[in-house]
Image (cartoon, rainbow, N blue to C red):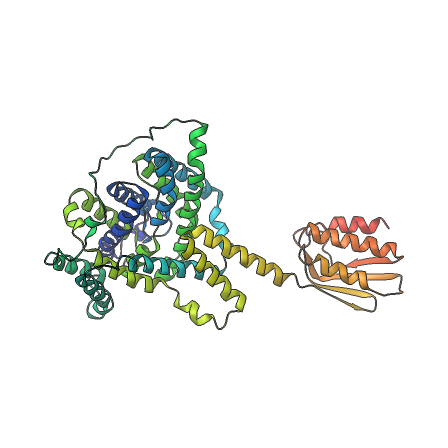
Amino acid sequence: MLFSINKNEWVGNLRNDFFAGLVSSIAILPEVVGFAIIAGVNPMVALLASATTILVISFTGGRPAMVSAAAGSMALVMATLIKNHGIEYMIAATILTGVLQLLLGYLGIQKLMKFIPKTVMFGFVNALAILIFLAQVQQLPGQSLPTYAMVITSIGLMYLLPKITRVVPPALIVIIVMTIISLFFSKYLKNIGDLGSISPLQVSISFPDIPFNLNTLTIIFPSAIALTFVGLIESLLTIPIVDSLTETSGDSKREVKAQGLANIITGILGGPAGCAMIGQAVINVKSGGRKRFSTFAAGISLLMLIFFMKNIMLQIPTAALIGIMITVSFETFEWESLSLIKTFEVTESLIMVITVGTIVYTHNLATGIFIGVLISSVVFMVKSSSISVVSVNNIFAVTGPLFFASTHTFSEHFNKIQNSQELLTIDFTQCRILDYSGTTAVQQVIKKLHDQGKSISITGLEKHNPKFNYDVQKIISELNKY
């Protein structure tokens, strides 16, 4: 069921969830505002879209405490569409993205996540940590000394405060204290309002004012496909991170459908598409968020900031947020992966490094994951293509998987045999025939040996279990010809 209210998913941690939600709502601001300006979207519209997304997913999502909003990764995908065709086409693409995600949720696309290797997961998480860190550091060149001092102080407080008190999340204390301090050094410190022009917000419920025809579909469909998969990849790969931090399990299928529903509603309200935000999700959990109430509180807090406390929101110093996000980048990085490099094979470590490098270089999560999985698949096939044929007393025992990558080795062995006996037995007990190429290779060997005057006997094949070996009947049919 997509929409349900389970009491245990909401209550039991209200105070911590409330404070965590406050912190998360503020942590969302710099990324959403910054990338909205890059994409050409009114920052206030992007913030409203973030509030909508996080509230919808608070009720419908499959991973309590995971923060979703108008993420920078999605904004980058939409930037070209907005530049070439305008905001209305972005809205249409957002709605279509939601429809596609909802459909894929019912089709069970989340099952594909099991094909992403652990090394690629390490690469994904480490790349995001690096991107979060770089995004903060890139804001520092040319800043004033008070800015550097506030960043360093914020980082120090993030590590020091938990040793003093855990009643209030350290990030919330840092934001409040640094905002008060910034009022006395306003000439030397930049705040949220300095990120760009913040236009007034006009909320309306409507469908995009564009022609509903095939030409429009050809314009928005490529962007919608990209948004669909970037959003799902980031969301589905963030779930296990939150699972690990909270020692609980999320529902990936429900989360996919919730992301789709949130994007449909967000699009109808005129906002950009969103997805899970790993940095803000980590902040939420590290601040004590565990239940759905934490993200609900974040959504309500965002609405309060947008409609009733805009001036206060704009005064929050970016230096404090930079310090907080730098600590989040360190918390997000899988330091375990560095200690495991010595125990990994060279290829496994290389896959992780290539995944990290691709994501950091392209800023495209989908591309990095695709390349990482592709290389992992090639490595797996190379390792799995090892097959041996050992002959004892005219019995040829085949060991290993027989598929397109190992058929050449299999066939070569029988091409080289020197045996005067007329009856030969091929034993497949320790072999699995995995595909059409494997079956064909066996048929060809049978035919070749028969042409040499040999009689062939086959053992070890499961005739009544098609899942055990691929199309055994074809091999039997080949034998029956002779």
